[in-house]
Length: 425
Ligand code: GLC
Image 1 (spheres, rainbow, N blue to C red):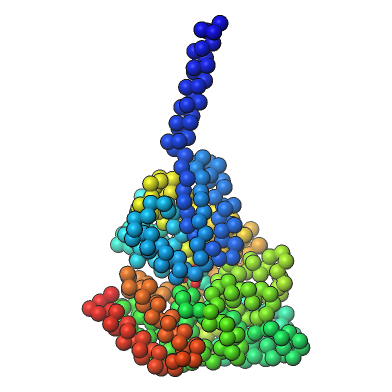
Image 2: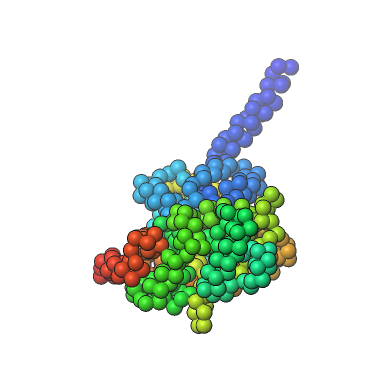
């Protein structure tokens, strides 16, 4: 008996060992780093579950600071050191030209699916023919406004910056007199980081002041309209915007807005789902509109944002990482992200999706806004972009803080950018 049973037992053990071996050989853990803004990390944990189940792999999500500037600084260090611990990076739309050399070319892996996405977005992630990242969502900001308060004061949604400032002041003063001591008219992102570059680019562009650097790489930032645009924004600080706005990033502005302490806010679409979420004091009380323009021919301008996923060329788990990247950028996952986080899909067909339109009506309304959004000058300035932006936001911040008048800030900035440009970008 013992001898008869032995081969069976042996077969079972052999099979178990084979399974173990297969699991060890094929199932891997993918380390994924992503900035943590709003519900980003919680949602990501939910989104990766079906992929983990299907592949047998696991994903460890490493939350990074919300500030894109802080993320970029850390990632650049890791990549320069050839860090093999991170397999997948969530990347800002502006990083592609700067970090391209560190990521795997996804052209072949994504060949069947790139056509599902807006071509301009795929183009923004393509550097010298190499597809360095796949998009997970695109971004274009909105003017959030309190419907209830505008109704109460008989005001319309502002379409110019002057109207915004006047309405913000009127409602702020009225509400304060009625006992809402902490209310402010307008919150935005005024800290010294990339988000301020986005805000200030909108002020310039919507007032006829150009785009810092034009599409040919010429430095255009020092012009009278740009000076006026910065003077306009500096005039808001401590009148309709809290002095603390000088250190606000996205989440700080949303904090003030979502507790009901702002009449208007400039922010990205993620704040829409959160503001309407259960328990939000402003649930159902607000809507969104395009940001104001300068008036006349000076139309509203929205800075183009967005996030992507890229595979590190130092990853020891490239196949699994590529599979995860394709999954996260897929239509199904983008739909879930749109439904839950009101983040704008990059998959074209989702703009006709009835579930998305019903649950997050902002999304179909924002298609034209992001398609016409203004890109930051990252393609022209290539590896110098972060420094260009850093010099720009620093100059703007000094003016907002009242340390340097707008004209002087932009004159110094122009000279600094010329030095940086040297013979060319
Ligand atoms: C948003 C945008 C991103 C931008 C950042 C600035 O996350 O999607 O592109 O750089 O805001 O704070």
